[in-house]
Image 1 (cartoon, rainbow, N blue to C red):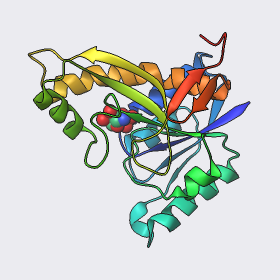
Image 2 (image 1 turned 180 degrees about the vertical axis):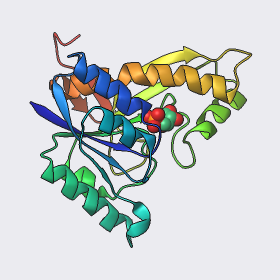
Image 3 (image 1 turned 90 degrees about the horizontal axis):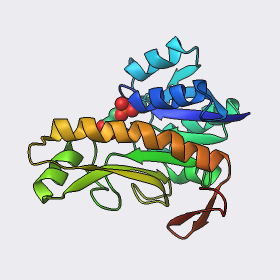
Image 4 (image 1 turned 90 degrees about the vertical axis):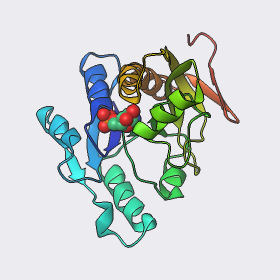
Length: 209
Ligand code: GRF
Protein backbone atom coordinates (compact mmCIF):
# COMPACT_ATOMS: atom_id res chain seq x y z
CA UNK A 1 0.00 0.00 0.00
CA UNK A 2 1.52 3.35 -1.02
CA UNK A 3 2.09 5.78 1.84
CA UNK A 4 1.44 9.53 1.68
CA UNK A 5 3.07 12.17 3.87
CA UNK A 6 1.16 15.47 4.12
CA UNK A 7 2.79 18.79 5.01
CA UNK A 8 0.43 21.39 6.49
CA UNK A 9 0.51 24.84 8.10
CA UNK A 10 -3.10 25.74 8.77
CA UNK A 11 -6.70 24.59 8.80
CA UNK A 12 -6.05 21.45 6.79
CA UNK A 13 -9.11 21.40 4.52
CA UNK A 14 -6.92 19.98 1.74
CA UNK A 15 -5.63 17.36 4.17
CA UNK A 16 -9.27 16.59 4.96
CA UNK A 17 -10.08 16.09 1.29
CA UNK A 18 -7.19 13.62 1.03
CA UNK A 19 -8.32 11.83 4.21
CA UNK A 20 -11.85 11.57 2.79
CA UNK A 21 -10.64 10.32 -0.60
CA UNK A 22 -8.57 7.61 1.12
CA UNK A 23 -11.42 6.50 3.38
CA UNK A 24 -13.83 6.44 0.42
CA UNK A 25 -11.39 4.22 -1.48
CA UNK A 26 -10.88 6.86 -4.19
CA UNK A 27 -7.15 6.89 -3.45
CA UNK A 28 -5.54 3.50 -2.88
CA UNK A 29 -3.03 4.65 -0.31
CA UNK A 30 -2.69 5.43 3.37
CA UNK A 31 -1.63 8.65 5.00
CA UNK A 32 1.44 7.63 6.96
CA UNK A 33 2.17 10.94 8.66
CA UNK A 34 1.07 14.58 8.82
CA UNK A 35 3.76 17.15 9.52
CA UNK A 36 2.95 20.75 10.48
CA UNK A 37 5.40 23.61 10.82
CA UNK A 38 2.84 25.34 13.08
CA UNK A 39 2.16 23.93 16.53
CA UNK A 40 -1.59 23.88 17.13
CA UNK A 41 -2.56 23.99 13.43
CA UNK A 42 -6.10 22.65 13.17
CA UNK A 43 -4.83 20.23 10.50
CA UNK A 44 -3.16 18.36 13.40
CA UNK A 45 -6.59 17.97 15.01
CA UNK A 46 -7.95 16.52 11.78
CA UNK A 47 -5.10 14.00 11.73
CA UNK A 48 -5.73 13.03 15.34
CA UNK A 49 -9.45 12.52 14.68
CA UNK A 50 -8.46 9.98 12.01
CA UNK A 51 -5.73 8.35 14.12
CA UNK A 52 -3.04 9.53 11.67
CA UNK A 53 0.39 10.05 13.29
CA UNK A 54 1.47 13.67 13.24
CA UNK A 55 4.59 15.67 14.06
CA UNK A 56 5.36 19.34 14.48
CA UNK A 57 8.56 20.61 12.88
CA UNK A 58 8.59 24.25 13.92
CA UNK A 59 10.67 26.17 11.38
CA UNK A 60 11.54 28.72 14.07
CA UNK A 61 13.58 26.05 15.89
CA UNK A 62 16.00 25.61 13.00
CA UNK A 63 18.98 27.69 11.99
CA UNK A 64 18.45 27.24 8.28
CA UNK A 65 15.96 26.11 5.66
CA UNK A 66 18.33 23.23 4.99
CA UNK A 67 18.14 21.94 8.58
CA UNK A 68 14.38 22.48 8.69
CA UNK A 69 14.02 20.50 5.47
CA UNK A 70 16.36 17.76 6.72
CA UNK A 71 14.19 17.28 9.80
CA UNK A 72 11.11 16.86 7.61
CA UNK A 73 12.95 14.51 5.26
CA UNK A 74 13.97 12.31 8.20
CA UNK A 75 10.34 11.98 9.28
CA UNK A 76 9.28 11.06 5.74
CA UNK A 77 11.92 8.35 5.58
CA UNK A 78 11.12 7.05 9.07
CA UNK A 79 7.51 6.70 8.00
CA UNK A 80 8.40 5.05 4.66
CA UNK A 81 6.55 7.74 2.72
CA UNK A 82 6.23 7.28 -1.07
CA UNK A 83 4.53 10.56 -2.00
CA UNK A 84 4.69 13.92 -0.22
CA UNK A 85 1.71 16.28 -0.51
CA UNK A 86 2.09 19.94 0.42
CA UNK A 87 -1.40 21.00 1.53
CA UNK A 88 -1.68 24.60 2.57
CA UNK A 89 1.99 24.40 3.54
CA UNK A 90 3.43 27.89 3.65
CA UNK A 91 7.18 27.40 4.06
CA UNK A 92 9.90 27.23 1.44
CA UNK A 93 11.82 23.97 1.50
CA UNK A 94 15.38 23.22 0.51
CA UNK A 95 15.94 21.30 -2.68
CA UNK A 96 17.14 18.46 -0.45
CA UNK A 97 13.54 17.24 -0.36
CA UNK A 98 13.06 17.43 -4.12
CA UNK A 99 16.32 15.54 -4.65
CA UNK A 100 15.16 12.81 -2.26
CA UNK A 101 11.66 12.66 -3.76
CA UNK A 102 12.06 13.36 -7.50
CA UNK A 103 8.60 13.79 -9.10
CA UNK A 104 7.13 12.51 -5.86
CA UNK A 105 6.11 15.79 -4.22
CA UNK A 106 2.82 17.51 -5.06
CA UNK A 107 1.63 20.99 -4.17
CA UNK A 108 -1.68 22.71 -4.57
CA UNK A 109 -1.91 26.35 -5.55
CA UNK A 110 -5.18 28.34 -5.43
CA UNK A 111 -4.86 29.81 -8.94
CA UNK A 112 -4.26 28.74 -12.52
CA UNK A 113 -0.45 28.51 -12.65
CA UNK A 114 1.74 29.74 -14.22
CA UNK A 115 -0.42 32.82 -13.69
CA UNK A 116 -0.75 34.29 -10.21
CA UNK A 117 2.10 32.25 -8.76
CA UNK A 118 5.49 32.88 -7.25
CA UNK A 119 6.64 35.27 -4.56
CA UNK A 120 3.91 36.65 -2.32
CA UNK A 121 1.20 34.74 -4.14
CA UNK A 122 -0.45 32.80 -1.36
CA UNK A 123 -3.79 32.82 0.43
CA UNK A 124 -5.78 36.04 0.19
CA UNK A 125 -3.17 37.80 -1.97
CA UNK A 126 -3.78 35.41 -4.84
CA UNK A 127 -7.51 36.05 -5.02
CA UNK A 128 -7.08 39.81 -4.68
CA UNK A 129 -4.64 39.81 -7.60
CA UNK A 130 -6.99 37.70 -9.71
CA UNK A 131 -9.93 40.04 -9.13
CA UNK A 132 -7.91 43.20 -9.70
CA UNK A 133 -6.53 41.71 -12.94
CA UNK A 134 -10.01 41.43 -14.47
CA UNK A 135 -9.50 37.70 -15.14
CA UNK A 136 -12.79 35.97 -15.88
CA UNK A 137 -11.66 32.59 -14.56
CA UNK A 138 -9.56 31.37 -11.69
CA UNK A 139 -9.11 27.91 -10.27
CA UNK A 140 -6.70 25.53 -8.62
CA UNK A 141 -3.53 23.81 -9.76
CA UNK A 142 -1.88 20.64 -8.49
CA UNK A 143 1.70 20.47 -9.69
CA UNK A 144 4.82 18.45 -9.09
CA UNK A 145 7.31 20.31 -6.92
CA UNK A 146 10.68 21.22 -8.36
CA UNK A 147 13.47 23.38 -6.93
CA UNK A 148 11.60 26.58 -7.87
CA UNK A 149 8.46 27.88 -6.13
CA UNK A 150 5.12 27.39 -7.87
CA UNK A 151 6.82 26.19 -11.03
CA UNK A 152 6.52 22.50 -11.77
CA UNK A 153 4.81 20.14 -14.17
CA UNK A 154 1.06 20.65 -13.83
CA UNK A 155 -0.80 17.43 -13.08
CA UNK A 156 -4.39 18.66 -12.69
CA UNK A 157 -6.17 22.01 -12.96
CA UNK A 158 -9.79 23.04 -12.84
CA UNK A 159 -11.51 26.41 -13.09
CA UNK A 160 -14.15 28.61 -11.50
CA UNK A 161 -15.76 31.70 -13.01
CA UNK A 162 -14.85 35.04 -11.45
CA UNK A 163 -18.20 36.83 -11.09
CA UNK A 164 -18.59 40.62 -11.00
CA UNK A 165 -19.82 40.39 -7.43
CA UNK A 166 -16.90 38.25 -6.26
CA UNK A 167 -14.71 39.41 -3.42
CA UNK A 168 -11.37 37.79 -2.51
CA UNK A 169 -13.23 35.88 0.20
CA UNK A 170 -16.01 34.60 -2.05
CA UNK A 171 -13.51 33.66 -4.75
CA UNK A 172 -11.29 31.90 -2.19
CA UNK A 173 -14.26 29.82 -1.07
CA UNK A 174 -15.08 28.79 -4.65
CA UNK A 175 -11.44 27.95 -5.41
CA UNK A 176 -11.13 25.91 -2.22
CA UNK A 177 -13.97 23.65 -3.42
CA UNK A 178 -12.00 23.05 -6.62
CA UNK A 179 -8.85 22.32 -4.62
CA UNK A 180 -10.64 19.64 -2.66
CA UNK A 181 -11.76 18.00 -5.90
CA UNK A 182 -8.51 18.14 -7.89
CA UNK A 183 -5.99 17.13 -5.20
CA UNK A 184 -7.25 13.55 -4.82
CA UNK A 185 -7.44 13.27 -8.63
CA UNK A 186 -3.78 14.30 -8.98
CA UNK A 187 -2.67 11.97 -6.18
CA UNK A 188 -4.35 9.03 -7.91
CA UNK A 189 -2.70 9.80 -11.25
CA UNK A 190 0.76 9.95 -9.68
CA UNK A 191 0.40 6.94 -7.36
CA UNK A 192 -1.09 4.82 -10.15
CA UNK A 193 1.82 5.86 -12.37
CA UNK A 194 -0.57 7.09 -15.06
CA UNK A 195 1.41 10.18 -16.14
CA UNK A 196 4.29 10.89 -18.47
CA UNK A 197 6.39 13.98 -17.70
CA UNK A 198 7.68 15.80 -20.74
CA UNK A 199 9.47 18.98 -19.64
CA UNK A 200 6.83 21.05 -17.91
CA UNK A 201 4.08 19.03 -19.56
CA UNK A 202 2.31 16.14 -17.85
CA UNK A 203 0.57 13.82 -20.26
CA UNK A 204 -1.71 10.93 -19.40
CA UNK A 205 -0.49 7.50 -20.43
CA UNK A 206 -2.67 6.06 -23.21
CA UNK A 207 -5.85 4.52 -21.85
CA UNK A 208 -5.46 6.49 -18.67
CA UNK A 209 -8.42 8.89 -19.06
C1 GRF B 1 -5.87 27.82 1.28
O1 GRF B 1 -5.76 29.22 0.96
C2 GRF B 1 -5.66 27.03 0.04
O2 GRF B 1 -6.11 27.75 -1.08
C3 GRF B 1 -4.16 26.88 -0.02
O3 GRF B 1 -3.71 26.88 1.33
C4 GRF B 1 -4.70 27.51 2.17
C5 GRF B 1 -5.09 26.66 3.35
O4 GRF B 1 -5.42 25.39 2.89
N1 GRF B 1 -3.81 25.68 -0.71
P1 GRF B 1 -5.85 24.24 3.97
O5 GRF B 1 -7.28 24.51 4.32
O6 GRF B 1 -4.93 24.39 5.16
O7 GRF B 1 -5.66 22.95 3.23
